[in-house]
Length: 262
Image (cartoon, rainbow, N blue to C red; front, side, top):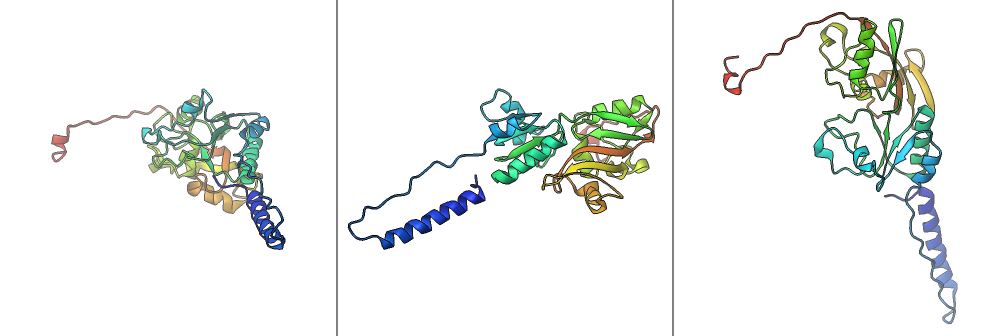
């Protein structure tokens, strides 16, 4: 773990002054050795007190589950802490704490990424799962970054609306939308990010921004396919929806031995 920049500068200055003092002493002067204080890690208890959400750290009963991703291959990853912010202001507090404590930050939505990018080994995972509200507003929808596709599709379909998404119900909307988002309806309605009309995002400077085509348009453009934790932590999405009705689908199965014939 890297010490805070201020600690590094303080330690370096103390070492220089100790050297200067040693050269100025006479041979009979006693040598005063600087005291060695243990380097303290990030104060996650202080962060927890500043949040409306909660923090899980190693040793807590919930930690084994909190650190786990969907892919078992990443079961050995061990973040320093997992934060569950209740709203965008909590996210801003997490980013401010991480910046002051020199702790890497990893946003996490559904935790399904095959590359393990939401694991946060040795860092602070900011899990947006608590912000999962799905609301239909006319032909648009507001969807919390922690919502999963199962609840997104069910809520929208109940109002006769939909957005292009994948099929797996436990995948998070955040990673899907920020990474582009392909689904069965994409050939008709485009990708998930094509339907994105705006977002609430907390940038690394701790500012909560409402972005769309008319506000921070460059950031909005970047989020539509290239924003999986690269430019900030998104806490809410706004989508354009399309009408949906009943649909039928079929699956074809065959053995590997028949592949050539198929």
